[in-house]
Amino acid sequence: MACGLCGVLALNTSQAAELKLRIMQTTDLHMNLLNYDYYQDRLTDEYGLAKTITLIHQAREQAPNHLLFDNGDLLQGNPLGDMMAKVKPMAPGAVHPAYKLMNLLRYDAANLGNHEFNYGLPFLRRALSGAAFPYVNANLMLTGPGRPRYAFTPYVLLDRRFTDSSGQSQRLKIGVIGLAPPQIMQWDRPHLQGKLVARDMVESARPLIPLLRRQGADLVIAIAHTGFEKDAQGLGAENKAGELARLPGLDALLLGHAHAEFPSSAFAQHPGVDLQRGSIHGVPTVMPGRWGDHLGLIDLTLARQQGRWRVVNSHAELRGVFRRETRQALVPADPMVAHVIAAEHADTVSHMRAQVAQTSAPIHSYFAQVLPDASVQLVAQAQKAYVQRAVQGTDLERLPLLSAAAPFKSGGRQGWSHYTDIPAGPIALKHVADLYVYPNTIQALQLKGAELREWLEMSAGQFKQIDPAGPAEQELLNPDFRAYNFDMIEGLSYEIDLSQPARYESEGRRSASQAHRIVKLQYQGRPIDADARFLVVTNNYRAHGGGGFPGLSAEKIAVDAPSETREALAQFLASAQVLTPRAEKHWRILPIPGVRMVFRSGAGGIAHLQDTPELGLLREEADGSAWFYLRP
Ligand code: MN
Ligand code: MG
Image 1 (cartoon, rainbow, N blue to C red):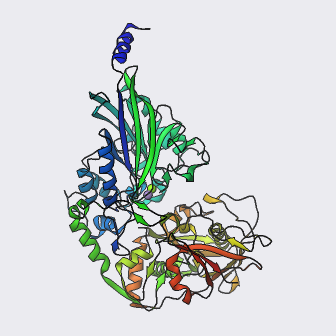
Image 2: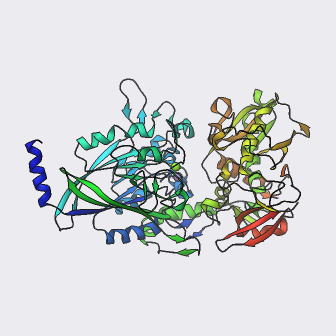
Image 3: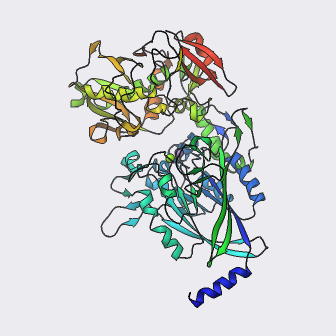
């Protein structure tokens, strides 16, 4: 053994002290700074950084040594985000309201999520310039000649003083690496093409861990805007928590993007998970939900070994702002937020309240996953009207025009109050955003008849298979299927036969079965010709392959519109002046004799049953949901 090491070892024995360090994480805030639902136009107890701040203060009081990180999907996702980026863009030199707050909270570092790119790079750079803490990303590179250059700061080495268990001040260096899903290149292609190149997250992080060690890092943390899949993920995949946790030398892993909660029983069957300690393959890990509904905490116990601090024990947990089972607030909102962003909030609320039209009947999405639905059809019609104008005088004008749309607000993972629910009367801008939550743009694909059927087969994966010989009551909806992938195609009529297995698994993998669920597919009352050409309106997410629909990809884009779907919807509503929402019954689930098909939705749907003869109520639950059934 070298003599130099003897001195280090001697020093260690005289310094047996431990050091406790708490790492805190927020993620996927999506501009929910105040605990305010801009679509419902009221305060909420269920989410908002104003609530998380109270948890942050409590956690800091309990643990004098602490670090605070954010994992991105911060700047976009609600009308306040749109206000700052588009409606009343920030003046040069102004600080984005997210950073007014996060600077006061003394965040230590933050990571970029995929939604940070939704408003384009110039906006992002301008907003980030207001952050008083570093941003990291290690897997996005600038395009251009010569050696690849990082588009952002790949990592930081934080230099901090903490107090050990004997009261001594200790200097620690903490390496922090940021990662974002490479899929941003598809999702925001118009903003990023020719400017950035995305690399695999794991391969980007791998060399940086030993590099940070060589630069003196006692700890290395990855803030990764990525989820956690059960199965092994390949190069370039979107959700790579499992693979990241297996990288040698990582001391803590901060996750996000999937809006899920880790540790929680949802991940009990995933490989390498220890729910008690809160770890994946031994690496302490948190994913604190979304919109500030949880704070993620990792408590590390460090001891000095071989010249640097090492983790000897860890515990990770989530703390929530709201108890879902009893619908109770767990913490008050910190009043600081309402003060600091008062002007931006007031601008947003008044913008959202401006009237654009009237509706003669309520418009809601409680049953949009099981029945043709006016809230979805309004979007389909608005998109169609927009593209009809856009193709006037071009060759595309001659193609039959169809329009695909899906339910966006559909409870479940987002909470049982997360539905579109607009009463009869005036329609304001807040309702437009309520009908169409995402800042997608309009695109139209040129497709063949055969491809339309596969599109709908993929959508029909939303449903479980119903066994005609099985129990008398069977559940309809597959909880793992995202409702925003349940596209309905306006202009076609069809029936869905759920006695058949799904033709596709998630992400468009053909299932083993050759079955078809979509039957009696017709255009203008006649069976669809497999070779006939159609123009189908959708959004940028789907057109660029989002959701992994078979046959849908960017090469088939025939109309690439600059407008947001919401702008088209606002135009459509304004030109209608008075709406008479009525769902055209262009598709249905085929009844299966002897089986009652049941599904869960928000209890708010009960009030609309009187106008929905196709459905009956089974029972209401205490958590704000209710069970309904399809009448045969
Ligand atoms: Mn997100
Ligand atoms: Mg995300």
